[in-house]
Amino acid sequence: MQTRRRFLTSTSSAAALLALGPLRVSAEADPAPGEGALAMRTIPATGEKIPVIGMGTSGSFEVGQGTPEYAALRDVLKIFFAGGGTVIDTAPTYGNAEDVLGALLAEQGLRPKSWLATKLSGVNGREAGLAQFDSTLGRLKTDKVELLQVHNLGDLKTQLALARELKAEGRTRYVGVTHYLEYAHDELADIIAAEKPDFLQINYSVVTRGAEKRIFPLARDLGVAVMINRAFEDGKLFARVKDKPLPDWAAASGITSWAQAFLRFALSNPAVTVVIPATGKPHRQADNLKAGVGPDLTADERASLIAALA
Image (cartoon, rainbow, N blue to C red; front, side, top):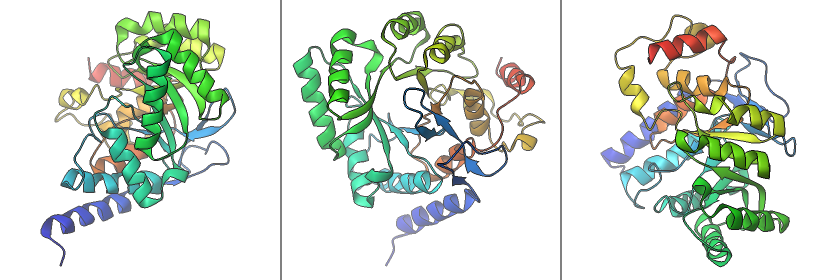
């Protein structure tokens, strides 16, 4: 007999799947606004297309196996892939997130559908980086990843060289660099100009727009794909709009929640390739995916969101 907890979890998951409605993914081309498909954007280095809404694992996947939170993540992944998502970002320094992600993907046979991004994180020296990467592959239960990033620019020269070696060996398809705070934007921009990685990952939101100054223009000029973290400012944006109605234009743009508005804001910058919000809640996963359907915000709509958070 189902326990009450399992019943509530399965009911919540079913409701979230129904909430996706006609959302579907188109792998052939960028869908026209309003077609109901999760939009795809091109990775400049190869021309490969990926969905614009991905997911992060920091915090949300740092849970114990066998817990209610672990069961909820099983449904989070089901909804993510059912809605056309593929891109999942993680790191060996996110607690046990790689272990949990690897186990859940293997359990559901989802690795072939996944586009995995991980990192060389918190290590110094080539051998330490290589050992960490080998451990990561074991934790993720895979023999390669799609993207390997040097986390927060740590030991950059050595770890980026290692990432490129691994790319040459076919153990990763792309290499990148990351950071998550504005003080590092100028340093990151200098590195992008010098190294021209395939990807960069940086923070960007309605209230933190420093990436617009140098990073985004450089990425467009040099053909570097851009992955966005902290689009919700670690959840702080929701407190700032508590009890505020959505803007009048939201419904016409297909936006039904503040989460969708914040994600669509990030995606409306033409330099951005994919946004990676993290959640451990099935209904929030369904809601996040809806941000990837519909037109980019206009300049006036972006300005109104900025004003609403001022």
